Image 1 (cartoon, rainbow, N blue to C red):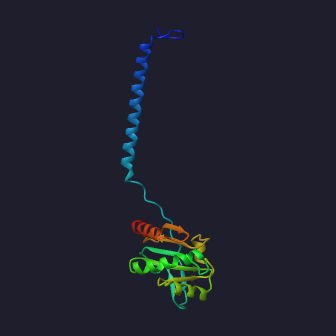
Image 2: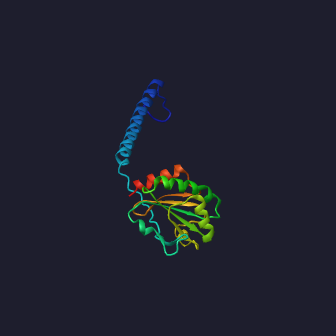
Image 3: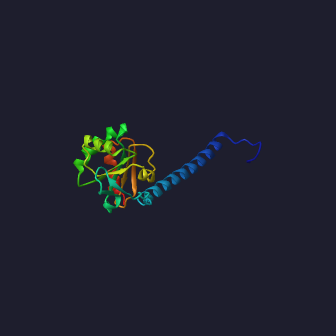
Length: 189
């Protein structure tokens, strides 16, 4: 008899607990298998990432009156945009790396430098001293920087061929970050 105040013999109680344990273990194993099957089945079909569109711009080329640097000049090409200034110490440290890297990658990667809140003479002296050969746009009133939400320098944005932002580095960029950004901008569509 089962009920309140009735004790079962220890062997019968143990058999009942073992039976329940087997049922619970089987249910947990079945659930775990279902989770694994669902995760494997959906892992390759993730929705594509939504990358924000980069703001277009046209600026006067630094130290080259009459010439312009425009994002639209590079339609259909991945682009790296680096915001900097001659008075920025981290910029002074990163610019030789960017200049050297650009010379090695020339023709394979578009790199645009945007000089922010600077004097033309100081900026021209800076790029000449650092060996910069990539196009530089002059943004003295931080108009373009504001569109990108830049509130500190340097900052580097990596755009795919649709000119969507796929990566962003705040602070002096490293070779590893350049390689990662280029990989992302070339793989993102």
